[in-house]
Length: 262
Image 1: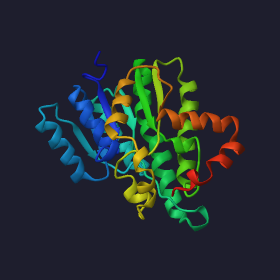
Image 2: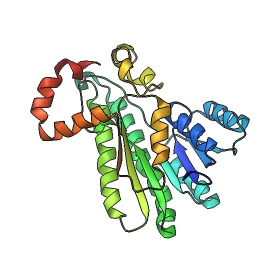
Image 3: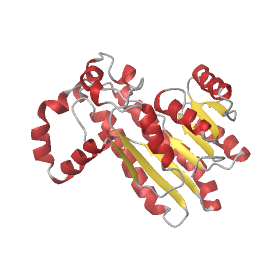
Image 4: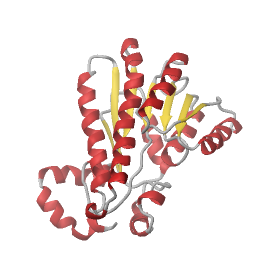
């Protein structure tokens, strides 16, 4: 069954990478899309591509989710016009640095976008979903939220926060009919690394293990409308994170050079 058809799906960070892929795939499945991103030109490009394929024209909004005052205004307009069925909180970024060298403005920016912005968008649609008794919040977290590695302490902290928030929220609204799903992918072959890893060395080191955005998008959309707690990709990395919870010291020791690819 096509559980996406005719659903109103809001996607943040939809101008490129995974967000754009999810938008294209959801449009092909007949969703009514609201696409949000900072870069309006790129949003327009995705909108034109969706229309050119003969799919329903998406609504677009230029928005930096880290600006919670603007989030409130934009989402007020969205929820006044539409009943949001699914919110995919995809907007986010990472910067890889040893913490001792990290710029606190970069760390603050990651927290503001990856965590506070995600919370603000969620809070904007949640009352409508709860009052209706249905809806789905899908938060794009990361395997980094389960296992932190050198040079990703700041980014991992933001994704730990996303997981903690999602788990608490899921319990708070367990009787409401609204689902909360976290998506924890390993590295995805997108433009994420143009910011996170300006040297290009990490991307080169792990390229053979990177997930395709098409694969991750398919997994996300297959979960829409279902009480899926987590989507963990790839399987072997998820197995490693589970082992880490039980034997952290051993995994850190054995991980050695594998954890130092950045």
